[in-house]
Image (cartoon, rainbow, N blue to C red; front, top):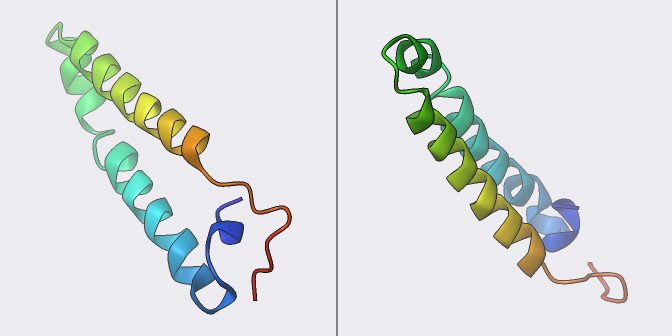
Length: 72
């Protein structure tokens, strides 16, 4: 799905950059989950994850359809 959003000359960077950002956002914050859970603030991490998921849903909804477009 991501590859079709970009012309062929930049598909690797176009698909790799959002993947790297998502990995940093979720994977980078993962060590804080046990700390937040033991300090009674698990709701903060849950809210953070929900916000990121909502942003992802909006982006996926607004993606253009590329079915009939030449991608060369």
